Each structure stands twice: as structure tokens, then as C-alpha cells.
View 1 (cartoon, rainbow, N blue to C red):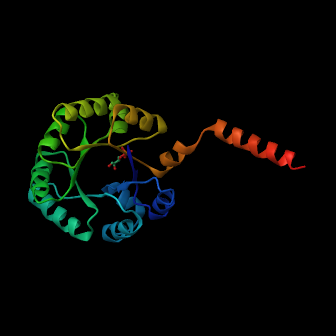
View 2 (view 1 turned 135 degrees about the horizontal axis):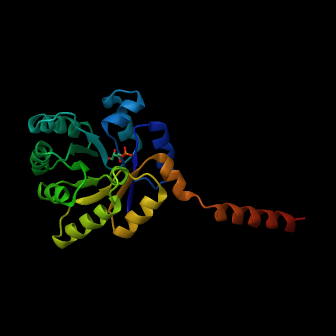
View 3 (view 1 turned 60 degrees about the horizontal axis):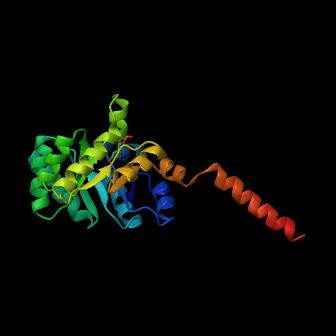
Length: 214
Ligand code: E4P
């Protein structure tokens, strides 16, 4: 399972990437705004930090506009993946961009049928939003299981990029479900390392060692 960080804050990205365990980055318009920086500036810096897929979202609502933006993003760096929303226009742009060899991450997916459409459009990634479905009183993780199964049934190449993951249990369940990628905030990435018994055990090993040295 690949780990992407869902952030446009380059300081935390640098910290995550230093572990060697971060495979890529996802951004969205909200995250870019939260960084307080211009899209081009922050994306260029991210390309210098991470050697892996970097999703950058289009802002147009029509297919032609998304296609044009996608083409522009793709010229910024070889690792850029164009993010298009799961709308009719978004999938029309996805089909066009994919045909030209530009990788697309179809975002804002909330149903298995939407995921099926994205795969047929040639998306490199589908992003089902687990946390937002949970927020809406639905079982977000069941959607991941369903999409993984459907893609297996038809040997689609599209990777399931489980998004809107909010806590370590989400990562655990995505790994069990066979999601290819999980994207989550840096804070959640840090939580994955932690277990109180690891801390207690380490403290005891080190204090026993110290005592034995006299
Ligand atoms: C993914 O690509 C999205 O940027 C993200 O995972 C959304 O997460 P949220 O629902 O916690 O905002």
C-alpha cells in the first residue's frame, strides 16, 4: 500500500519524506488556500521535495477548461497527476487527458458506479472519500471494498486511492481491503508510528541496560 500525504504544507511534507515512507502527495483547492501560497509556487516546491505522484486539482467546471488546465499542470513536472472531479465534464476531460498519456486522479468519488465510470475513462487513480461518507452517515470503508472488488473483476488498471482518511483505523481497514494507496494528513501519518507499549518497552530496555552498566 502506497502512502500519500494530503497536504500543501511543505514543512510537514519535508518531515514526512525524510522518513523514506512517503510515496506521493495529494492536494486540493482547500489545502492550497490553507498553505497561504500561490498554487504554482507551492506545487513547484512539492516537486522538489517528493519524487512520486503529486495530484493537482483543476478548477474549471467544463471539460474543455479542465483539459486545458490539466495540460498546463502536466508541463510543470513529470510527476504531476491532474485531479478532475467526478462529474460528466470531469470524466470527459479525464478520457481526453488519459488518451494523451497524462495521468488523472478522479476525485470526489462517493459511489461504486462513479468509480466504474472513472476506470472506463482511463483514470490512473480513483479517489473515494471515506471520511466524508462516514460524516454523511454512510459506511465509507464499504465503498473501498466494493471498488477494489469491481476493479479486480474486470482487471482495471486504475488504482484505488482511498482519500479523506482521518485516523489510523481507516488506514488499517484500507490495507485489509486492498486499497492501492491511502492519502491522509501528516498528523495521521505520525499517529501510525505510535503505540504506548512501544514507548514503555523501549524505556524499560534502555533503563535495564543503563542499570547493568553500573
Ligand atoms: C483527497 O484527495 C482529498 O484532498 C482529501 O483526502 C479530503 O479529505 P477531507 O474530507 O478530510 O477534507
